[in-house]
Image (cartoon, rainbow, N blue to C red; front, side, top):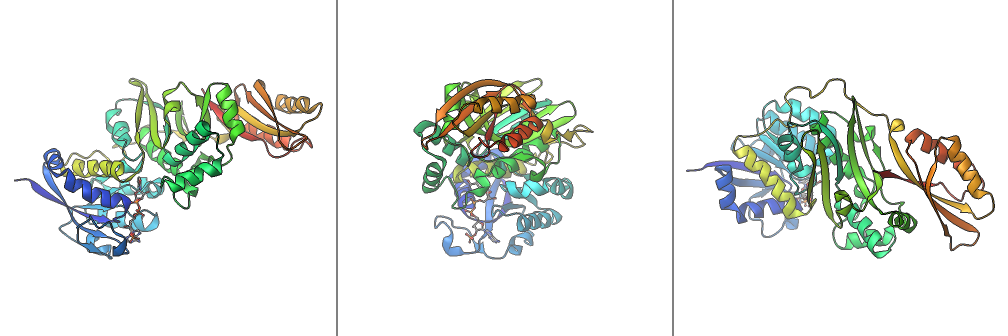
Length: 424
Ligand SMILES: NC(=O)c1ccc[n+]([C@@H]2O[C@H](COP(=O)([O-])OP(=O)(O)OC[C@H]3O[C@@H](n4cnc5c(N)ncnc54)[C@H](OP(=O)(O)O)[C@@H]3O)[C@@H](O)[C@H]2O)c1
């Protein structure tokens, strides 16, 4: 006779409902794999009338009904938010209940505290990064013999959908965002997604597992996609690039660089081929080489697939340490200062169209040690202006930011030049 593992779900919305239904629909295969019957004992919501009517579990409004129930083995937090979710996690772990969450925002701030409080009580968070793609287990367990050289991820399906649509259909950012909202890919308040913050939450979770670095979102470079326009798409296309919002982690010596920003990347690279609402992650290990993970990064069923994999792992009593290490991975690792990050750059500069303009721009770039690799000029519809699109040879952040600042002082410049990094 299988043992029974009782789960209490806090939050029975999109993901919570999908978890309840998945456990019912795939009950046999799950119990065979888990060696246990995983049963949802009760769920917490604020407003019962909003709950999916197919969900037939006892519901309560009181989170303590779950946290204080001695029969509940696993607390599953699927409500989102930071402070209350962290309180729930602490209380669950203090009560020696395993804790599973899909909440990247809370983990971005509290993963190390939780690892410490947990001691050996299992914590699962597979669904917090890239929804259905099992990237946490891949990085923590499958690649655990490697030094991780780098990670490049498309970790936000909303942004990837918008950028793909802009590239394929020639539409502007606002039109594509509206379409994403209409299709349910973007929230009515899409700020977390399009600002790059959601990807940053996920990147720093991955970086904790890969390097043991304890970064907060405010420690890293984060830029969103809202300023990208069709001139940028045109330039990228002309030179064989595609624009993606990438979350990048790289280790060099005792420094780790972590950043999220739009990138021009070759169309031929695997990561460049991840399109639409899908997520993709490339992880390079020193022994394994490049590995690539692709799949749905959000949505009820893909996310529930990841959540239930955590429940199964816990039911099997086979949990790994939360972040995958039992003592510090490497001592002395530090975050690379943003100013010393090196890259090639693309600049879009709207200028007054008159003789001598280009000379003034190249002179400022030259003064900052930056040389131009490729240059295109596009006429502006509004008379008297032109848009220069150029890429540079390798430089660094300090130089390019200084050059942009200097360019802004020229009276031939219409507005602040827009920059995108080129990943090669
Ligand atoms: N949706 C996805 O595709 C996806 C993918 C990966 C990760 N995640 C993460 O999964 C988590 C849940 O996302 P979701 O899309 O399922 O959210 P959702 O549809 O908004 O559901 C949230 C649920 O939590 C309940 N809730 C919220 N605050 C509560 C509180 N203070 N007390 C009691 N119940 C509360 C809500 O109840 P009411 O409805 O009654 O307010 C609702 O049942 C989030 O951390 C999210 O980042 C989601």
